[in-house]
Image (cartoon, rainbow, N blue to C red; front, side, top):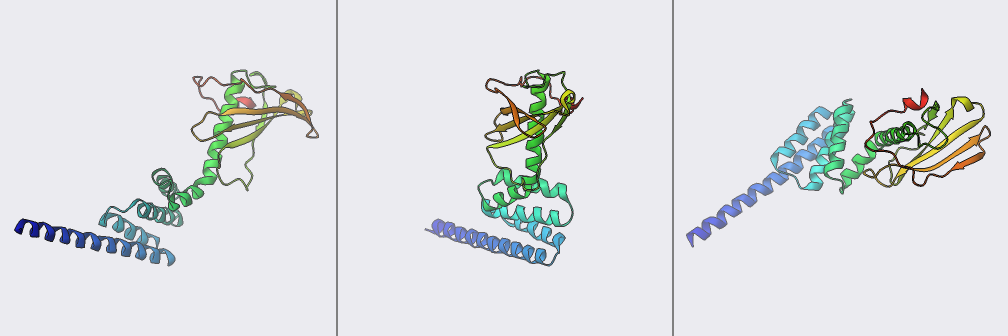
Amino acid sequence: MKKLDLLLGFCLIVSIVCSGCAIAQQGAILSAQSDMAKGRYESALKDLTQAQDLKKPAPDRAAYIDLLKALCYEKLGRPVEAKAMYKFVVDHFPGTESGYIAREKLSPDLVLKEVASAADYLTTLHDQNVLPGAGKDVHGEVDGPVPFSQTNLVYPFSWTFYFVPERDRKSFTNCYTVGRPDKDASWQLQRAWRTDRTGKTVEEWPVLGIVSDTNAPATNSASLRN
């Protein structure tokens, strides 16, 4: 009976301590929010670190603490640390509200990375001599501008590039749409066509069965230009 009483007493103490840590953790988070509202971001970072040290937070709370840290880094003009923290939240807490907010913060950079990856794929097709309308010996100017409105990365993702061969600079533009269903999927050439100087489609090329050799050495889009 005494052992049972001791065990129950110990459990009660642990429960009180854990409850106290949870309250203190919430207090540290509230203090950090107050500091952030006043522009005291260094102080807020200290509060948030204290909140993490008091007790291992539940996933939703852990994501929120790291999101606040990322916001502090961003406000302090420390973009590298901010982006790293946003990415950490996205990678480790993808299903949380904080994870969604962090992803929105990173979206413009993610779009640029996807466009660059798509451009590399298009260049690989060109170098392997399987790009319709532009053999590997054909060079020119390629463009795939990112409009200011395109800030959110959404899958399936596709992008259209415009290639002006040097020999047809005044007459034609080759257009290529590249896409993939998700970030881990392979790129595919979805459409290839040529327009005249008025933008009218004058030729459409088949794209089914066009694939790149994934074992080929990586190149960059400069090979399309020169």
